[in-house]
Length: 221
Ligand code: CTP
Ligand code: CA
Image (cartoon, rainbow, N blue to C red):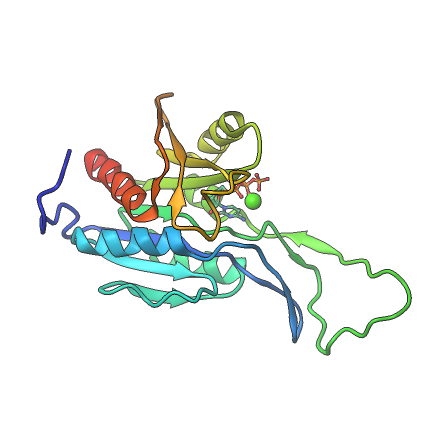
């Protein structure tokens, strides 16, 4: 399905998009983080708004400006992202989790800056909740879309996540490729669907990929 310019097939639909990486504080001046910049999620949020959706963008720290026509909520940690998504989930028609959520957080956050010593430093980390897995468990009418950034065995890992998290589809990319993935404008993905189908796409802009993902959601609605 192709949309005519200005057509709004997502009019009246509520869509939650997450973007960027969460950061997990270690002390007042340090954190654990990852290389996600938010480009993919911001492109999806902007495109969804253009197609008429009411969009909530829950974003980790990012240098990108709030997309036009999108309600943007900025958070830092995985727990904060989970709370923001959860608060809007019941009324949502779709959730697209493009955020790189930290799987672990420091078990304790030091009140004061940690001083160095001559010994090695051991950090104790505890698991963050899997936000998308939780949404999959509570799923009602919502369309759930996940992302999987892998460095190997892309198909196997993506399919496992698709089924474990109860998703409608998962967008998988090989982040070991230099020209696609983190912090660049392009992505090369495969999309795996619930019914076992897979679509492989060539290298394309994140904006173009946003259009493809939203097109799939429109078809499913
Ligand atoms: N995700 C999430 N909450 C987490 C971790 C991941 O909601 N704590 C979401 C991501 O936003 C993404 C999907 O789950 O849409 C897959 O994330 P990924 O990191 O690839 O998979 P994990 O299940 O965390 O497994 P692993 O990192 O071990 O590959
Ligand atoms: Ca992970």
